[in-house]
Amino acid sequence: MPAVHYQPGSFPPDDRLDWAALVPAIGSATAAVARYDGLLEAVPNPDVLLAPLGAQEAVLSSRIEGTQATTREVLEYQAGQEAPSPERRDDFVEVMNYRGAMREAQALLKDLPICLKVIRRAHRILLRGARGRGRAPGEFRRIPNWIGPPGCTIDEASYVPIDADKLADGLNRWERYLHEETRDPLVQLAAIHAEFEALHPFLDGNGRLGRMLVPLYLSDKGLIKKPMFYISAFLEANRDIYYERLLAVSRDDDWTGWCRFFLEAVRAQADDNIAKARQILSLYDRMKRHVADLTHSRYAIAALDFIFELPVFRSTDFIAQDNVPAPAARRILNVLRDDGVLRTLRPSRGRRAAIFMFDELLDIAEGSAAE
Image 1 (cartoon, rainbow, N blue to C red):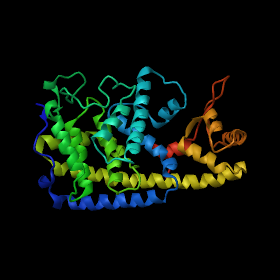
Image 2 (cartoon, one colour):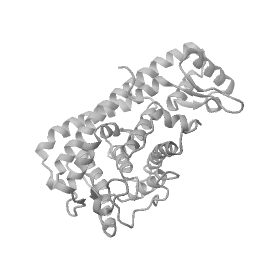
Image 3 (cartoon, rainbow, N blue to C red):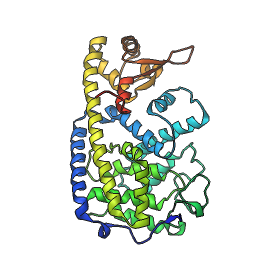
Image 4 (spheres, rainbow, N blue to C red):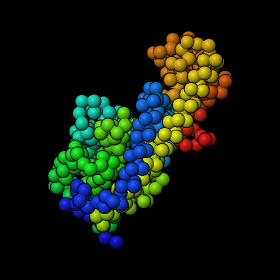
């Protein structure tokens, strides 16, 4: 089957959309995002409590591109556990870079709108020290690239993006559309994501950056209070359909089919995000009482916040935290270990710190907790 090529002139797609067919999906997705935003606003310190969901998003977005890491494995590696092989270490680094790139973009968006500068800076972090470090981090490509089986030639590719000499014009058109007022912001987001993937502006990392744009856009447009929306679980579970819908945009000019799929992804993931956030809030409220009763310490909540933000950690990091004096931290850590709140992943030995894990929180993030 011949490769599908980028089709100039089809973006932006507003006049190609069957709006009547999209209206039900728009309504459902918009209502679900609004419900999620209402919950997000009610979460105390969401940067702490929802941190494990951000870690899971980085894992799943990277898994779509072929990594094999789990959230637990990445957090274990980050806490000092050795990787089982160089290949898995690279997987872990890619996931950690995803989170670093997201933090870089969020920091930049305090002073800038979403723009190509922000995307290039995030891309530089995304490919830092990973498999893509030789793939021009932070630089738009100047040569052709294509999508297909590993090692395939351009003639064997399934998709060929825009020519490198036309990429700058395509990106400028994409950036202008990003800031236009359109008929519906979620449909605009669907088009933005699809066109970014179609342009494929970098030699590597395009898929992960395209998915990273989803929470950044939702926050920038005021649809959610913080850029904390996790869409990759649906896309990873429906990977073949995801790729087919994207391909159909260039092959068949089927923007309506793509937008319908994307809106369903937004609706489904908003509902899933709500369910997980509620489980985390319930766990936090229960653990506040439990840890306070166990420790009888005025530092119980500060210690609890630490393990919610970092559910796999070194004992030395817990003891060195700013909000709890070291003697109190040592005692609380021992109490939580003895009670079974924390599981010892690696005991201390000599100068090597122990590593602890808060399994109950990770079960929620990874979707394995009982309802």
